[in-house]
Length: 286
Image (tube, rainbow, N blue to C red; front, side, top):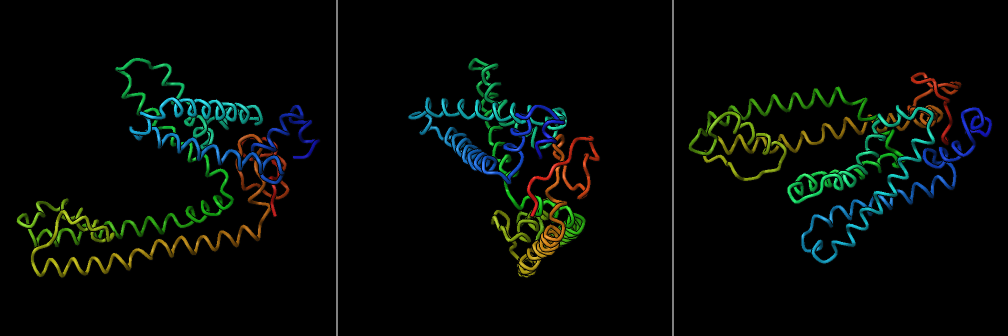
C-alpha cells in the first residue's frame, strides 16, 4: 500500500497499522507475525494445561492470570484489525474474523456466568479457546497453495469417498452373511462399521471373524485398504504440484488482496475489489 493510497483511504496511521497486521513484506509485519504465532501457541498450551487437574491444583492462579493476559492481547489485536480495514462488517463476518472473535469471547462469557451451577457451561465455553490455533493458518506461507489444491481435487476426492463407502457397504454385507450374529456381526450396520475399521487398517479388534471364509475376506479387505490409502494422497499431490506451478507463473495473482474484505485472486491491473469495491493492494508478491 503506497502513501498516496493511505491518504485517500483514511488517516496515515490506519494504513501503517494495516501494513503491520495484514501484510508480510515489511520487517514490522514479520516481527508481529512471529510474536503473534508465539502468543497463540502459548495460549493454547495454557488451555491444555488448564485441563490437567494436578497442574490446576498447584498453578491454578498463574494459569488464570495468563489466560486473562492472552485474552486482553487478542482483544487488542481484534480491535486493531477492525480499525485498520475499510469494511469492518466484512472482516467481522469473514472466516478469520469469526475465529478471532471465538478466541476471546469464552473468557468474557465466563465472567458473565458466575456461580457453581454454571461451572459446567463455563468449562465448555473455555474449550472454545482452542480455536486460537486456527489463527495460525493465516500465517502459513503455503496455506493458499494447499487450499487451492484441496479445492481443485475436491470432486475426485468425493468420488473416491463414494467408492469407498460403496465398497464398505458391500463388503460389510458379505461379512454379515458369512459370519452372522454368533461372531458379533449382529447387523449389517455393525458389519459395515467393521469393514470401515478394517479397510482403514485401524483394527480395533472388538469384532473379529471366526470362520475361514470370513478371515479370508478380512485379509482381502486389509490388503485393499493399504492400496487405497495412496489414492487420495496421489490426487492431492498432483494438485499441489500444479497449484505451486501456477503460483510461480502468476505471482501477482496470489498476492493482490482487498484492503477491505481481504479477498484475493485479483487481476494484475485491478485497482478495486470486485466483491466490495475496496482498494486492491499488493502484499508482497514475488
